[in-house]
Image (cartoon, rainbow, N blue to C red; front, side):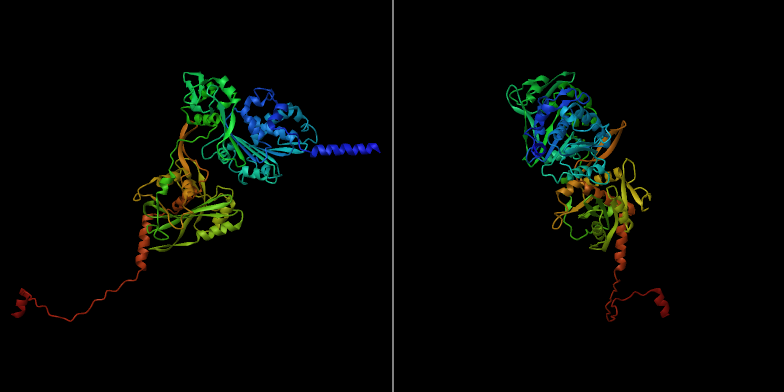
Length: 623
């Protein structure tokens, strides 16, 4: 009877081993002990050492730290951010098994990561080698996009593939180069939000975002960084001991001799000069400092000045080559400094537009003769603005409203329909309806917009078309599912027109814009509205060697701007002469007024006392 008892004991011991928590080992300790770097993906193949990139120790060790749910890394190139993600994946696969999701910008970049970085790591790191079956075996769970291992699995997807983002739950989600993600995964919405939803059921979930940044105002990694506690890496001067962040302005060089570039201590009273060897040595003695209160989201920023793989001379050469070319300079700012790029373009200060607010004496200002509306469709709400128009294309914003709801359901459309059918009262001309409305089809609910506009009168489907020189509104096409007219908007032309009108600061000039203020308008016409109204700027850039102008967003929320553009397009579709419109309304008012009879008071006849002079005719009568 001893043998069966021994068998049970062995089984129980194995079960307890599986259920018991792993020993206390951090990601950096695991990597130093087990990780092997592959020749295909590293300039230093062989045993991994965290000390080479000491600044990566804390971000790695935050994985598994109680209370930490999200880690954001806004990093430059050549600071080992890809190795950081690989170490965390290897740690979880070997040491803390769970379902993992890795999201790359595209399917192509996902396959590149799987083949060129993950597979070599699984092959060359001994403790990982046997966890995933050989891809050549018949029942293998080892494919390009899936790696199954005891206790978990690793799924790899592209941010542009919605099917891979919305299936089984995962505990760990890793986003690589998020600033290269499309804003929407097909028609499913934000790929980052879709992926994060898959981890919501895990109390010990971990979300990691890593990326070099892109454009100011449109950078997702900068947005996430600013949500966190914003940590920067501080290093001590070897001479004065002053702790400081490494900044480009303290790099001193002669443009004729980039190889002589040095870093100078930021302390004014010190001036210690560091070469590359000194700089790398003090980076090992640095530490991270948070600049905002901790809120569960730890965020890090790091530039290439900390990298042991990037000599100062190389950074100086890249800067000198890029200095006169905006496109190259943008790349340098993103990849070397790890900062967002802000184009030097034409911007409108939102406070200047706020100064154009006035208190209206009536629901519709007296000078308004016609109403249009622009509607922007978002994933969870509609946004609309009604604009009143008067002589010389002057405009008055009448109402701005959001309709919350799922656009795939009838409720928000019914609310929008009622909104567009409302009648406004003019102090002189009486009832005025909304004469023309444009609804954008460029979002994720194009078919729903088609159906809505097909069932409404004076409501038009529109779609923006890029390129300079196009008319504000082009000839409509019916090449769509419901065969309804779809009007193309020359977005560059119409945005230039709207921007020019917003800049006007003289109320007597043609095209001047006015906005309401006072009781009832505080919520609709607040700072967020005016910031959104001037959320894009005109920049000049080079494409294929040719100068082109483009409107680019520098703020994330730009719906008020879009609504104003669409309301302007709605007026253009009508093709009316606004000055003639006022004359016609005035004539109607005059015709509608009853003709007043003039009452003449009768007076008794009194002969005139003035003697009339005799004329020759009178003399002839007397003869």
